[in-house]
Image (tube, rainbow, N blue to C red; front, side, top):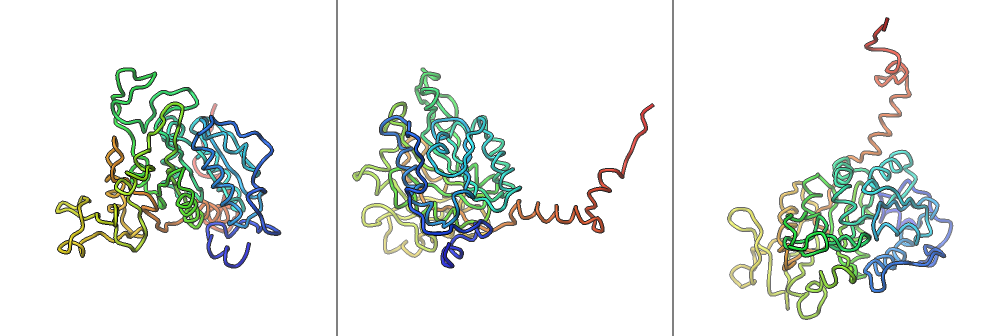
Amino acid sequence: MSERSEHAFPSLRLVPKAEGPQSARDFKTDQEVRWCPGCGDYAILAAVQSFMPELGIRRENTVFVSGIGCSSRFPYYMNTYGVHSIHGRAPAIATGLATARQDLSVWVVTGDGDALSIGGNHLIHALRRNVNLKILLFNNRIYGLTKGQYSPTSEVGKITKSTPMGSLDAPFNPLSLAIGAEATFVARTIDSDRRHLQSVLRAAAEHRGTALVEIYQNCNIFNDGAFEVLKEPGSRDEALIRLEHGQPIRFGTDLANGVFRGPGGELTTAPVTAANEADVLVHDAHAAGPATAFALSRIADADTLHHTPIGVLRSVQRPVYDELMADQLATAVDRSGPGDLAGLLVGGDTWTVD
């Protein structure tokens, strides 16, 4: 790892450097990639494999942990260490790795069903603890592996094999959930936009603490075209709001529209005019409070995805759980300190049982 990359990726400063330059080929395994033809996972895999050499770290010090689902085949295709774990429990296993081994770069790959249904509890606690993990949440708004049931992110009224009359459940907004759980880094990107996807991965890798990246991913078998409005040339400019820190939030053809703060503090969208141009909201991903980031996450219409923000919504610094834990352990083994581990085990309240 060069001096430049050490500075660029401070979250990996404890991870051993690679001995020489690496390429995407170094991160490809000899396993046949087995997703449905046309699945968005192929594009994400290629983007990640191309991005990993930028980190400049040893493959032996990189770990991908997944749960259960189509996306969870990811570790088989990365020539690093990997764990294909249990349904929903990838964040818990990854937390153990990250806290026990600060010399590892730990990445979690999960899906909307795996992370937000059976794994919801594990996800929110990893986020609130701020463990040094990078969580890639593939969101295709459907259960793909089990053949097309509705998921926690499926829209109301979604007709599937398990909801033939339409889903009655209000969907989770993963970014709102993450911000509400005090996540320090929250971002969204799209499987087919490789440049944007890699820029968000870069920002996540630079972050010290938990980074959640939601990736809109097409399931062309069971939910094809779910994100077409964000991809088609005729609609994407009006639908996508590309966030850049320090820049006014404008979008649409010729950036004719903007995001404004309403009288009640909510965020609204409207055409930009000479009279209101100065009022266009300037994006501050590093704002200490989460209110504006949360409001940004709520702009998109859940059904049509109209006005969907992509990019980094929030990136703030907070003490990292693994570092705090390591400090406590160092104190605990020092018998002269307040954390006398041996004394804790044999002292205190005791009982005699007859």
